[in-house]
Image (cartoon, rainbow, N blue to C red):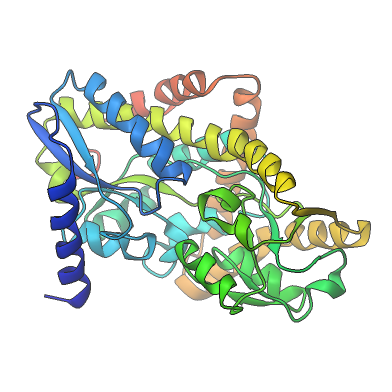
Length: 374
C-alpha cells in the first residue's frame, strides 16, 4: 500500500466518522471535489449534485462528500483508480501524457471567452470523441461533463501594467497554456496545485497567480494579494468534474447511470454559473473592500497577450503531434472550436437549468448508456 493510499484511508476514516448519517438510499457513493468548501466546485457543484442525484434516481442513489484531505486535485486520478473515491473532480491538464486527447482541448484555454459555451463545448467534444473515450477506458474512468471558470487574470503582490512588469515574476499557473504565456513574457511559471497557492504566496515562493478572481475568496488569497491586473487570459475549461471509476460505473444499472449523468449535467451548469459569473462579482466587491487595487493593463500588454493567444491553436496542434503522436490533431482542434462556436450561439441569455436542458437534449440523450463507459 502506498503512502498516499494509507494517508487517504486514514483521512477517509475520520471524514466518515464525522459525517452525519445519510438518508436511506440503496447506495451512497464516495464523491470528491478535490477543493475546499469555499470553491464553487465543492460549495455549489458537488453540494447541488447531492440533491439532483436523489431526485433523478428517485432516492436510490446518494453521495458522501469527501474533502481535499482525502483526495486533492493532484491525487484524484490515483484516488479514483484505487477506489478511495468513486466520483471525483479530475483535471486533464494535470495529466497531459496520460489523457492527451482530453488535454488537447484544454491546451486551447487562452482562446475562449464565454464560460457556459466553453463548458458545453468541452462536454460535447469529450462525450463524442472516441480517442478521448479510449484513453479514459485505459485508466478505468468514465466522463460525465465539464464546467468552466471566469476569465483568468493576474492576482499578485505587486502591480503589473506592462510586459516589462511581468519579467522576472514567479507566477502560479494551472496548466501548460498559462505556463507558456508566463515564459513568453519572461516570468517563471510554477505549476503547483491551486490548493497550495496560499502557502506558496505567503512564503514568498511565488509573486502571484494566473487565476480566477474568485480565488481571492475560494483560497483566501484576499489576505495576500495586493493587485489584480485585468487581462484576457482565457478560461479554465479542461475539467472532468464528475469522473466515475469504472468499477463503480459497471456496478450500476442503466437506469442509475442515466440518473447519475443527469444529476452531473445539472450540477455542471450550476458550477459554471457560480464560478464563471456570480462569484467573480462577489470577489471583486470583497477585494475592493479589502483595499486591493485593480490595475488596468497597458494597451500594449493587452495587444501582446491577444497576439500570443492567437498562436495557441497552431501551438496546440504542434505539441499534440510532436509529444503524443496525434497526427490528426488539427482535425480535433477544428472540431472543438466548431463546437465552441455552436454553443456560443446557443447559451446566450439562457439560465443554467436551460443550458443543462439543451445539453441533455443535444448530447446526453444521444448516449447509449448500455455501452457508454464500458
